[in-house]
Image 1: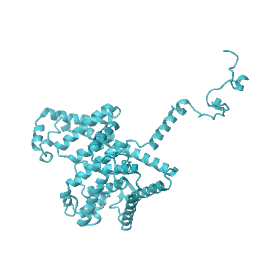
Image 2 (image 1 turned 45 degrees about the vertical axis):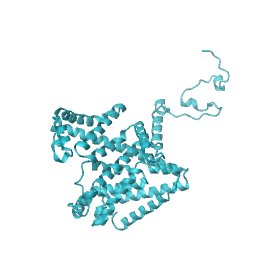
Image 3 (image 1 turned 90 degrees about the horizontal axis):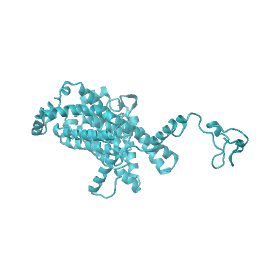
Image 4 (image 1 turned 135 degrees about the vertical axis):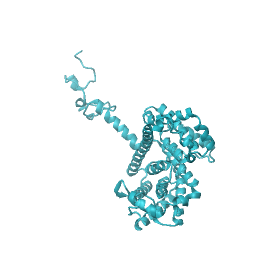
Length: 430
């Protein structure tokens, strides 16, 4: 090496002071603009550098707190479960009193005795008689329609939760498995931002119309909560206590949601571009992302547990599990079709084994997007077959709606464009 130094080199190098590498040498040197350079992070590059662990963690947190993940998937889940619950309530409308109302064999007294043990939430046993039941049942229909359309979704999802739990917990002996899925998803939807796209709320936000009706609805719900609190309903272990959290009741959860909605509206009016609004938005985004993760994990657990329990069953092991329900009157809405399918031994054998393989393999296919998408199509087709052959439409549609959390965004956008072409209004919803 030559003993000379390049022109323009720092004076310290000309005096023979060697250049040091790393963060220590960064102190006292100049940056490209001629100003003093700040000391760099201390530590190995793989940990502190932009491509290291700290940089990766910062980028992950920035996405987690600043980006609403799965907006179209959340909207699809909202639409799906709103449609499922609405279809179920309308289908059972002629028999509603016999199933859940004042003429049910499972009387209100029997329901109260069971609820005293499990502490499930339902408002139906608060009052006896037909009037209260009809009010709650038809409120359930309206809340399901509001969730389906994405109208005032923050309040609609809470009403949806209350009415779903109220109707289902009134008579827990009814259902085909789909009611359990609707039960769980009604809780999770409250914590998602499921009206970001494909909703009336999204169209109203783009138009910039005011929220006078929203304030009135918020005040009405607060008054109803206050009446429940003063009437003793919110403090009753029969109706409002969460069993998993003995010191936190349903009433406390609903008051918290009500207060947050009011705070959100107030900050949005006074300081829409302020720091408080940004913090609230980041918190809502993080809660949404956590809720979407919980929904995805729930679906995985449903398939994994179902598959591994089937593996242990002797009828699934010998390939005859599907043969028996196809010959039961309860599961044969189309006797001729069921007899035709049940008489084909090889297809029944293959479908039985294929069902087990699909459910066991599904959690492992999530690491490969293409295999996962193919498997989703197959499972949705299988659920449609269950709805037709076995007469379980609520269960099948609920599972299809839950599976939508794993659908690729490109496919959902493609489907949304096709639906937009046939709907009667022109204004886009997303």
